[in-house]
Image (cartoon, rainbow, N blue to C red; front, side):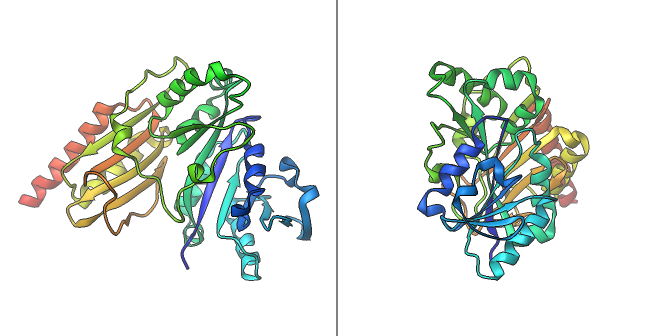
Length: 327
C-alpha cells in the first residue's frame, strides 16, 4: 500500500491556522481526511462530534477523523492507522503544529523514521502569515522566520484587514523563501488544489523560481534561499558527497534542501532530494522527467548561505569525482 500524503500546516500564533483547518474540514472533498492537532479544543470541534471511542481520537460529522497528539508524531500516526485498519476511511492527513513550534523536528521525523515513511509521505508545508502583525512578528520571533523559510506555500491571511500591507509582506517573504508559492486567503477561504499537491507527490522547484528576482533580505532576517540549476548530469557519488558536506558544514543552519537531480547513472528520470537540517530522505527516482529542461534544480534554505560557496562546493566535488573516474 502506498504511503498517504501528510501536509503540515503551521504558522505563528493567531495567524489563521485554526480557521483554515476548520474551513477545509467543512468541505465535502475533505471528508476522507485525518487531522492531527495538539488539543481538540484548539479548533473548537465539540459541536461536530459523532462519537469519542477513545480519549484522543474522535470522528466528526463530516466524516473526518481527528487525533490529539499527546506524544510524538509516530505514535499519533500509528494510532490513526490502527483506526484505519478497523474501518476508518481517510486518504490524507493534515498535521497542525502549535504557533510557537519549530517545524524542522517534525519534518526530520517524516524523513528519518522508517516506520513513518512506510505510512506517510510529506506533501506540502503550508505556513499561514498574518498580514496585520506579520512584520512585527518576523522582527521579534526567529521561529516565525524559520516557519516561513521552511514553507512550500505561504498563505497570507487577514488581507481584508490590512490590504496595504500585503505587497510589502510578499516582498519580505520572497526574501526569506524565493521558492515558496505565495497566495492570499480571507477568512480561511482558499482552494484546496492550491494548498496541496496530488497524492504522494513532493514539491519540485520550477525553472521560474530560480530565474526570479532576488529581493534583499530584511535587516532582521539571517535566512537565505539559494537556487541552483545545472545542465550537466552529476555522478551519483558526487550527490552523496555534496549532501554529506552540506550537512557536516552547515548542520542545523541548513534548514531545508529540496529538488531534483540529473544523475549519469540514471538518465531516464531524476533523483528526488529532500532534506531538513542534517537529515535527508533516502533518494527516490521519478519514472520520467517533469515538463521543462532535463536538468538539476535544487533549492537550499538556511542561515547565512552563500550561492558562490554552494556552487563552488558542488563543482569541486564533481570535478574530483570525474577525475577519479577517468583514472
